[in-house]
Image (cartoon, rainbow, N blue to C red; front, side):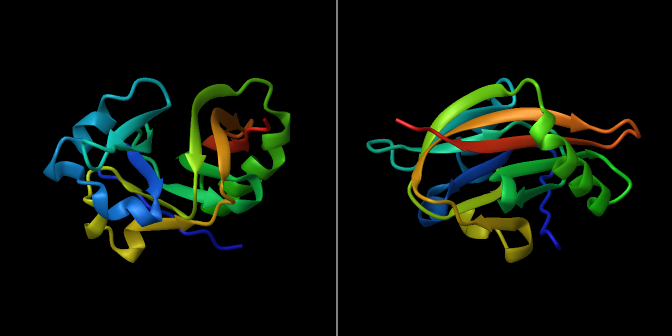
Length: 165
């Protein structure tokens, strides 16, 4: 399985609905600054029209290659690994054994998600700087955990868990 990876220039990665990506201003307005203000692993940042803001999900600013693993509904950040295949192997082997997930925000997802460097205006993100993620429309809670191996491989996993009402 080959995964696409993106990277930020050192700041947060942003997750927005693909249909709203054009509204993300990145460094051209306060959107990027607001994303940088998120404390903890993740947080919601309002963007778009001030009269009707949309929520963006900011994944805090560790400059790490980032991918999406559909089988776990998870955004995965590469903290340390000799190869992407080793990182994926550690995530697959460890995700079911995480004892403690840190709860993040709850977000309504209405369609395909775009994941990219928060500094970029949404209209400027090129295909190689962008992950497009098909997620079933629903309400999700983001949960974060680090998954490590005894050989020093480490991934930060941000899992979209569906909220059952």
